[in-house]
Length: 406
Ligand code: UDP
Image 1: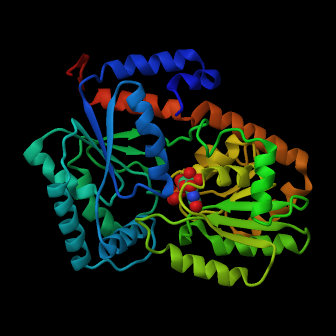
Image 2: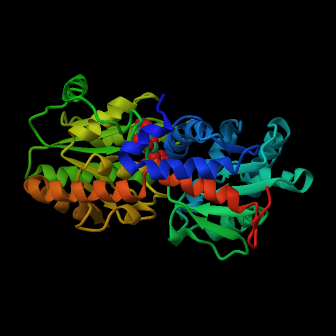
């Protein structure tokens, strides 16, 4: 288990001392996080790392997961897609069932926290309980909110308004709403299995196990199999590049328990990959952190060709490893990449293919992008900054004028 003091070698002891000071002021308060999956996707990824660290700092942080059946998660995935601007039909029966499941969870879950920290839209309606039990309620939005479908927004708005504060990952997601809104970007944990340094032998043996040739360029995208990550677009860009460069493509990802579309997308990806032996479609089981770490480190270029993206932890993970990254210029990604300085931002398959060729052909330029990217992640998107922002947010709920009510 990582100790919170271990981060001092990366960020300095002053930052760690400050975290302990802030945490002290939250003594006696329970922070109850609630989301919709314990495994898979960025939200679980962050909670897995941040909860134990908050606890080490002395904050009583806990984590519960709502329950739902296939129908519920089918509906929440449609809501998720509609929030990302995708045309989907969500009926009033769907919304009724969504609310019913939220109400069942509100009955079953013990809402014991002093602060109820609700993540994303799946459990958003738990806040109906606020009128009975009071407490402080924060809604943490992890999705790309730049062009949501208005009808679903109007539905969710009536719940968002009930919260004491809403947290977004990027300034572009702010809402026109009468509510305290806070900008807190996600983060990666530099000491986790996903991001820690790895011995070269470990990297080599993992690549060998996947049958990837270490002597030819490797292009990698790590993502859940989701349309919004555009895996088929990635294959098309690779094919354009492959006409000029003998390279390999790795598309690696697992599922998330709250994402029922994964298998369908995976089938489409496999069929698009056809019988090209240089396309490696890897369905990873949960807890493949070392494998993902090794794949990222062994890659020549990392892609994240998302069409929508709340933040894109995979971008931060790759940049932290000083890798050149080509990513869609969407959602939270431009917070991480300044075009042609700390990576490449693209808007099309053709653009992606063009920059793939360039970065493979110009390793010195690619190296510089990666180095700048790593510095940017170090300064802005490590978990210690995230912890500090959360502690300040929790404290702010008890702050009025210049007095803190604890
Ligand atoms: N991830 C993983 N296994 C997979 C695919 C993704 O552990 O098979 C991780 C990935 O490394 C990243 C997170 O899941 O830490 C995905 O977060 P991101 O913000 O990139 O996308 P999201 O899935 O939340 O849309």
